[in-house]
Length: 113
Image 1 (cartoon, rainbow, N blue to C red):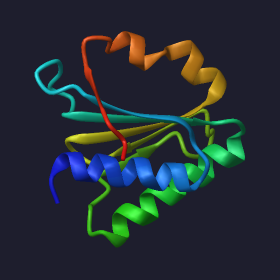
Image 2 (image 1 turned 180 degrees about the vertical axis):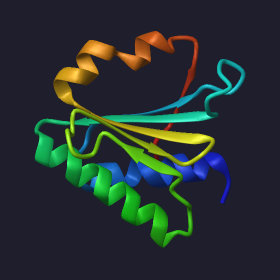
Image 3 (image 1 turned 60 degrees about the horizontal axis):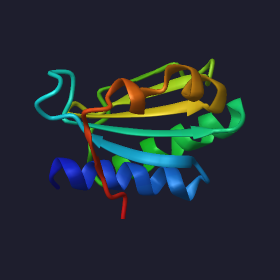
Image 4 (image 1 turned 45 degrees about the vertical axis):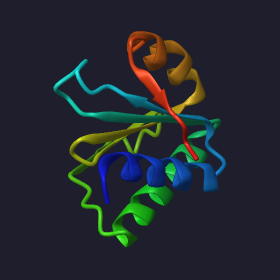
């Protein structure tokens, strides 16, 4: 499975949990952090946790190793590190505040499906 397929799988898993505004950014050449960001949000801490859990489970089922998960308990900004793909699951308020799409405005958006 290539990186864009992993990003799309994560995006699909987030959408299955009713994540809002699911976006994939291609940040290759813009950052050494990763090649792709998957960004989405939920409207409550419970939904943020459900989205993060759903993404983690779907990726593990597909054999994609999860290198780390941060922020799950607080559920305001959960980060799932897949290596060259990073999944950001925000609470709506934090997504609006941090606005990663604006911050990474030079990145190309990848079609989710």
